[in-house]
Amino acid sequence: MHCIPLTRYRIIGLWTENFELQSYQTFLAYLAFVFGASLLNTFGIRLLPHIDRFGGVWGMIGVVVISITLLACSSGKYQSAKLVFAEFTNLTGVRT
Image 1 (cartoon, one colour):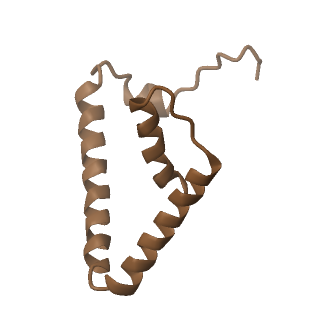
Image 2 (cartoon, helix red, strand yellow):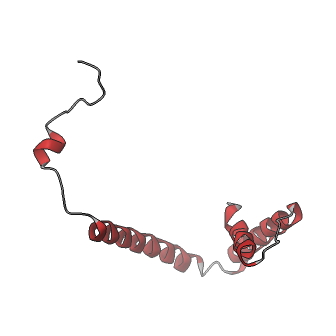
């Protein structure tokens, strides 16, 4: 859970040449994350279903994008289904 606020510090480290993360900065990032989540749960209760729906849709879009990318980048040189599912080639050197 604490890696999300620390990602901002990693991005700052990419922009700033001599940036070094201090322990108090990690604690401040944690406090900001907890404070923001507390405010959302206290005062933004009507937003939670929308955030939940957005997260679900975002996840489904990610699955579709990854599936399309994998299919588009595949070589198209596949083995036959019989070779994949029915045959066993022992390449371990151990005799059975």
